[in-house]
Image (cartoon, rainbow, N blue to C red; front, side, top):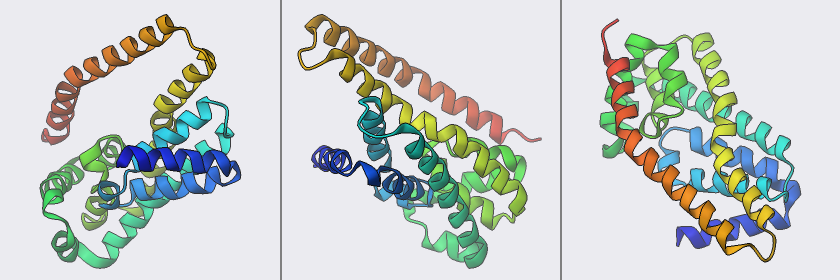
Length: 215
């Protein structure tokens, strides 16, 4: 069902290319806003937008800029929401599945602050609670926003790039692609995916150990 919905979304954006940037802003905002990223398939939609960029169906720069601004806006809104509602209500409103990442994020923020915000955007479980943790721990607005903006500038091309590469390869293959080329691309994709699956636990463990180490 998710794949069908994503396919429909890509077709809609392709038919309404002028709306690609505003739609990207909304998706990136929802992806960065606390908890919502768990409920909305934002990452899949951003990958689909990246594929449309790679296929030459939408302009890249407006979409990239909209993704950056949406990411900044989502985190900033979550941060100010947490400052407004306070730590007690923020903890009570969290879904049960988010409470452990939230508790760990609070500890990390008290020790690492700026770097926790920056790195948290790139880690799925932390991204869903990063603005909340920053807000309830009383992190200064200037420090939070600087990490928020810089991480969004890097995050936007990173999240759009895989889809863009896939779309570009599809365009290079043409309407009648070479079966050998298709096999080579699929094999490369599988190898990259398997390599990431093997490296991801080690990378996550190293980041956790680094961030949890007493300063």
